[in-house]
Image (cartoon, rainbow, N blue to C red; front, side, top):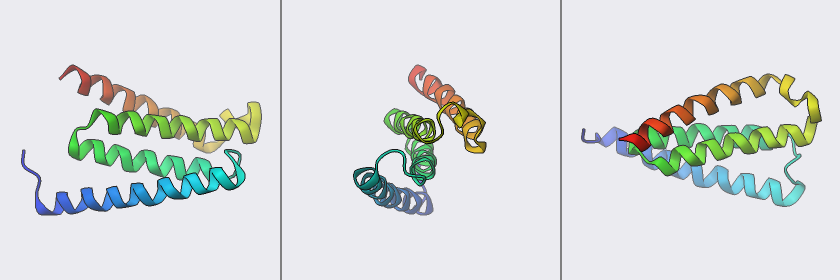
Length: 111
C-alpha cells in the first residue's frame, strides 16, 4: 500500500515531534534526573509517537523504541514513588500499552 501525501506529512511531523521530545527528555534527565515528575509523561508521549511511526513505516525498531520509552516511564515512576508506583493511574495505561506493543512487535517479526 502506497503512502498518501497526507501520510507522508504525518510521518515527517511525527519525526520532528520525536526529535523535539527526545531533546526535551534528555534535557530534563540531564538537569534533574529520572525522578523529575515530567519524565513519565514525556516518555509516554514519545512511546505514542514511536507507535504511530511504526504503524506507518512498519519499522520493528520503532516498536522497540516505543516499548523502551514505556519502560523508562515506569522506571521513573518507581524512582519517584517507590512501591506505590503501581497504584499510580498512569501505571495501568503503561502496562496495557506495553503489552499491546509487544504483541505487535512479535507479529511484525514473524512477517
